[in-house]
Amino acid sequence: MFNKLVRDPAALSGLLIIALVLAAAIFAPLLAPHNPEPVSLTERLLPPGADYPLGTDALGRCLYSRVLFGARVTLQYALSILIVILSIGVPAGLLAGYRGGLLDTAVMRMVDTILAFPNLILALVLIGVLGPGLFNVMLALALVSWVGYARVVRGMVLSIKEKEYIAAARVCGTPDLKVVWRHIMPNVLPPLAVLATLDLGKLVLSIATLSFLGLGAQPPTPEWGAMINDARPYLQTVPRLMFVPGIAIALTVLGFNLLGDGLRDILDPRSSGSVEGEKRHFAWLLPGAGKAVEK
Image 1: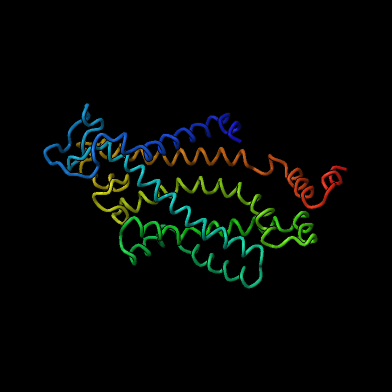
Image 2 (image 1 turned 180 degrees about the vertical axis):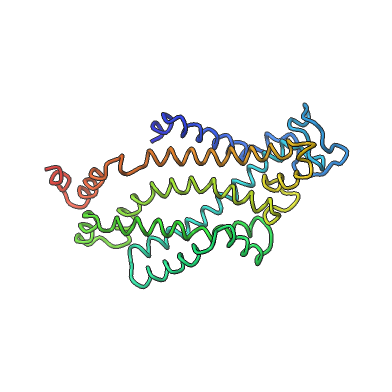
């Protein structure tokens, strides 16, 4: 898969961008020349130079250091939100699709109710109740975003469980948990990986948006959306204060989108051959079944 990924120029560009952002986030304490939080009014709005590669902001803080640490804050919370979303949405979709009945009806009515409201608006309501802060942003975005994954996973499970190899597994007496884990999950994971990669870009943008509105990161936490908000009064005089974190957000979202598109092309089941996948399932279930299918 990696060889196919590097042969796609767009996917390779996305991978390199994400690798660069991840490196900035991981090694921020080593790469940043200054602490990003202390205020120094005697050094406010300094131009780029040897000591401050991107200059300083309105409070005398190193802009380069704050952008590096902002990558750490943004990616940390985006990945945390995605983990919570997957932890809720995937099991809910698996249970609803595989079990069906009243459980499926209850889960899907809940999903339909949440999807009736725009995600960002519903997140704003939840943050208004919980209060501002990055943790509350993480909780609100997770609570309004898991429903999309539940619906996607349920739809895939409904399709997969009608396949012949699932019926063969049941006839052989395979427990439901093993059927789900060994036969359904491998078919669900590839499109789920694509969706998660694309959604990471959306989560980065949502975190920046809520922080820009003053509901996410609180001072002096270095976060890209909050940095853009702080720089608004200086757009005409010192535009780099807005452009630098804005470019960081745009590149990160672009990287995730390019990588997600590349993964979608590689992991598309229509290009990998569903017949071969079914042969492998039959071969595991019944000795010689693979040869029978070939005949």
